[in-house]
Length: 254
Image 1: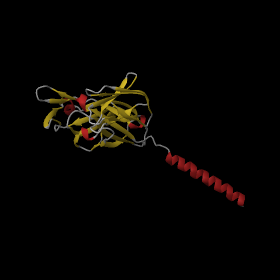
Image 2: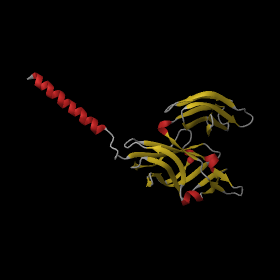
Image 3: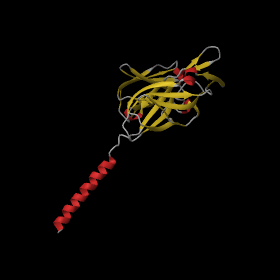
Image 4: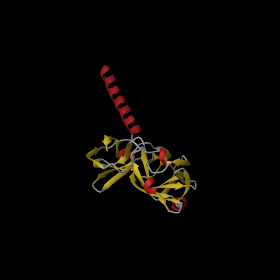
């Protein structure tokens, strides 16, 4: 009798394990949670305000509107490792080709205490098109970071007017790392460029001298800090970046 009970227990336990495995498997009909956040590199302005109205995802011949945290965002509030969630949703598509960021009319830049309107004709008509190439797995959350380059994105027309021609790259957070460090002395305007082969990523140190380059693909990089006169550039070689890791290069003395 004990032997029969043992056999029944083993069979029942095996069925429970099999059932649990089936429940834990991913159903191809499950939606893919999708999150879009926004960050920026420091820029030579007091504020860069963008009016975010909508975020759309294009893929598999479909266009999906995400749930949007609409509002006016000062890009310079989200620099050197800071970001903010602007949109999220559930996708039933397998491949994402493009993210479209649609802006409203309330875009401004503040320079020397004066607020100037930013004209963004392309963004208002069809959205800022950010090319991506993602194959999604159903049920697995995806996080995409939109990295603005405010310095490169704002065009001074020379007649007291400014236009926004955004330079944005989409970063898949799960497949990248970051580089950070400190410039000494602090308060010196300094650009930081990380280079690996033909790829380069740039930012600027903040007023405290701190900098962070997010969304850097894994690899070996040379990091060059170029400060304002009278300081000379400094290059640190062979900085290894790994997925999910932060390569802190420490203090760079000018």
